[in-house]
Length: 243
Image (cartoon, rainbow, N blue to C red; front, side, top):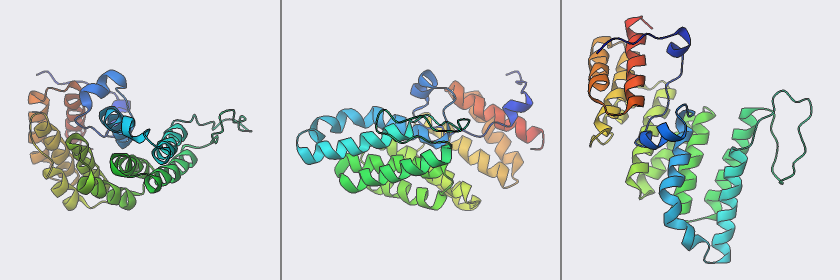
């Protein structure tokens, strides 16, 4: 396989949170931001499971409304260049910074957790984990991901949560624990190469460049996902350039 050429901008791109949702995500939004991709995947997978039952009574309907508001706040447009925030015509707050929006989203997802139960509650926990990760609150995000691993009943989303645990430990610079977490990822099918990719990234950060390069080359050669191949190729290029 011919070596790819990378621009300086490409080599500086942050690593994305890649999950078993890759095939869906490549079609929907190739350049999705980090861990919050879990939110979109969670909705696609779980929405059909709990929607009908949660509208069955008033209490459940209220809980669903709280969750809906949390989504809407997270999806709000940020207005960093405006001297004055535009008026709210939908009853939702407006934000000048991404961080302010994320902090408001975290509070709303917490309300959703407190007002719901069952699948809706565990979904809210998973989404709050993603928001907390984006905020850099790795310890809190780690707690949420661990909670989902223990209580969630969707296997694909458990994989996402386990992946999130590894990312949070990596964010806290606990590289040995992060490596152990990524090595615990299920290795069925394409998961094998995703787990190898994460393992290689951490090995490279630990200075074990030779082992990292060998794993990454296997991912480039054998993974079916073009996105995963691309990310592995980027990592290889960085290692070869001594980054």
